[in-house]
Length: 94
Image 1: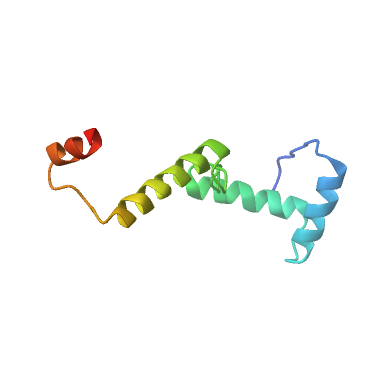
Image 2: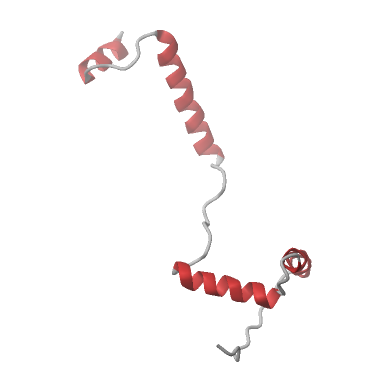
């Protein structure tokens, strides 16, 4: 398919230079890389990558740590899992 449309974007010059170096390692120009991105967006039906943070935020990390601490306390208490909700509630009251 012939390329006849023009796309003009403004980017940070430092970012442009850095990614230009990265893509050049693969024999791609910035224009080629943008075309790859656009084609992959079509293939995916959206952004071709996950936008979620690669690591949890501080609140989630704290909640995970709290959960792990609870699990360790239960394991070290020797009680293990409860057979019924009533058993668990009785243990909480004691």
